[in-house]
Amino acid sequence: MYDLIVVGGGPAGLAAACKAWEDGVRKVLVLERDKELGGILNQCIHSGFGLQRFKEELTGPEYAGRYIQMLRKTGVEVKLDSMVLQILPGKDGAPHQVHAINGQDGYMVLETKAIVLAMGCRERTRGAISIPGERGSGIFTAGAAQRYLNMEGYMVGRRVVILGSGDIGLIMARRMTLEGAKVLACVELMPYSGGLTRNIVQCLQDFDIPLYLSHTITDIKGHDRVEQVTVSQVGPDRRPVPGTEMVFDCDTVLLSVGLIPENELTRQAGIGMDRRTNGAVVYENMETGIPGIFACGNVVHVHDLVDYVSAESERAGAAAAAYVQGTEAQGPVLELAAGDGVSYTVPQHVRTESLAKPAEVFFRVNRVTQAAEILATDAAGKTIARFKREHMAPGEMERVALPPQLLKLAQGPLTLSIREV
Amino acid sequence: MKELICIVCPKGCHLKVDEENGYAVTGNGCPRGAEYGKNELRNPTRMLTSTVCIEGGIYPRLPVKTSRAIPKGMLFQAMDEIAKVRLTAPVHCGQVLIENLLGTGADLVASRDMAAHK
Ligand SMILES: Cc1cc2nc3c(=O)[nH]c(=O)nc-3n(C[C@H](O)[C@H](O)[C@H](O)COP(=O)(O)OP(=O)(O)OC[C@H]3O[C@@H](n4cnc5c(N)ncnc54)[C@H](O)[C@@H]3O)c2cc1C
Ligand code: SF4
Image (cartoon, rainbow over all chains, first blue to last red; front, side, top):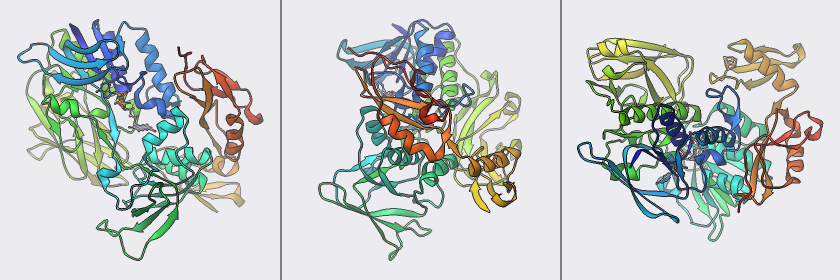
C-alpha cells in the first residue's frame, strides 16, 4: 500500500510529490500517462516562466527540468506511460483505490492513504465553440500545433488564421512566423484580448500581425484542406454583423479558445465540482470534498503562471503529508462567494481553525479595470479586508492573502468583489 | 513622436517617446517605463527561442534559446543559423550549441536535457 499516489507528472504533480517527500512521506508514487515527466511545459519552449519561483526567466522545459531534478533527489517512485483509469474513494477511512494501466505492469489496482489529482487541462475544440463551414483538414487547437512543431518537428501549415487571442495562440503566431509561415490575422470575439499585453506586443505587433477584436470566424471553406476563412465583426450581442465580412486565403486555422480542466476521473469518483471553474471544490489546503483526496494545478482551475501552480501544489503536497501522518484538517467551514466582477474563487471553502498562515485565495475578474479595490465582505455586510490594484483583467489571475485573525471574525459566506475607485 | 505600450509590468502604460528630444518618455507610470521606451526605439532586443534537429533522442527536436536578448532586427537571420544545427543525443541543458551567435555576444544554448534513447 502507498501513502500517497499523485496522478499526473506535470509541474503540479511534481511539486506536490517533492513537498510530500520533504515533509517525511516515504511511499509516494507518481503516475504519468506520457513518456516523460514535465507535462505541458515540455512543449512551451518560449521564455517567461519562473520569475516568481526561481527569480530568473526560464523556458518551459527548463522550468520542468528543475522540478524533475528535484524529484530525482528523492525516493519518489515514478511510473511513466501509465494511464490512470479510475479512482475509487475508500469508505470510512478505508484506503482509496487507484486503477491504472501500462505496458509493463498491465492493469493495476493500487491502494493508498492519500491521492493528489494533478491531471492538468486540455484545450477547447472547434466542437465546443461550433464554427459553421466545411470540415477540411488544417484545423488544429493551438496547443496541438505547438506540440507538433516544438516536439515532433512538423510544420502544420503555411498561411494561418488564429481564432482566439489566448496566450497559446499568440505564442504560436510568433512561433509559426519565425518558422516561415505567414500569420494573416488573430481574431478575437471579445472587445479585449484574453492574453497578456506582453504577448500582444512581442508576438503580434513585432511581426505586424493584425489583431481583430470583436470579430469571429463565420465560415471555413475547403473540402480536403482548409482554403479560405471568412471573418466578420460582431456586435455588442456578440452576433456577426452582416456586411462586415473579410475573406482570408489560408491553409490552416489555429484555435486558441480556452482550456478546460481534465476532470473525468474526479467526476467519476463522486468528488464535488464547481461549475464555474470546471474543477473540484477545494478547501484552503487543496483538499477536495473527500478526505484524503487533494487536487492542484490546472485540474482545479486554469492558471496563467506556472509559478502559482507550483506554490499551490506545494500546499497540496504538505496537506497530503499531514493527512498521511494523521493530522486531519477540521473545524468550522467559512464559505467564499464570488460577488460583483469576480468569476470564481479558489478555494471555495476555508476551515479557519486549521489555518496557520494567511489563506491564499485565487480568482479571476470578469471585466477590465484600471485603479480598483478588491473587497472581502462578510454576511453581516462588514468589509473585513480590502486590497488596491492598479490594473486587473480577465486574462490575469488575481491573488489575495486573507489573515486567519480576520477570517475567524467573519460571518459566512464571505464575498469577494471588485469596485472601481 | 512614437507611441507604444510598456510591457515591463501588467499595468501596460501607454508611452509616448520623442525621438527628436533625446528620447524623452511621457505617459510612464514609473521610471522603468522610461528606460523601456528609450531602449525599444534605440535598440530593441528580444530573447529568441526555437528548436533544432536532434537524432537519437526521445524526440526529433530539441528546444534552444539565446543566452541573452539579441537585436530584434536579427531574429530571422538567427533562425537561419539555428536551422543549420544538427545534433546527436545526449545533450544537456545549458550546453552551448553556437558560440557568439552572429556576433551578437549571445550564445545559442540547449534548453533541456535530452538523453540518448535506446
Ligand atoms: C496546450 C497548453 C499550452 C500552454 N502554454 C502555456 C504557456 O505558453 N505559458 C504559460 O505560462 N502557461 C501555459 N500553459 C499553462 C501551463 O502549462 C500550466 O500552468 C501548467 O503546466 C499546469 O501544470 P499542471 O501540472 O497542472 O498540468 P499539466 O502540465 O497539463 O500536467 C498534467 C499531467 O497529467 C498527466 N495526466 C493527465 N491525465 C492523466 C491520467 N489519467 N493518468 C496519468 N497521467 C495523466 C498529463 O499527461 C500531464 O503530464 C499551457 C497549457 C496548455 C494546456
Ligand atoms: S511605465 Fe512603469 S508602471 Fe507603467 S507599465 Fe511600465 S513598468 Fe508598469
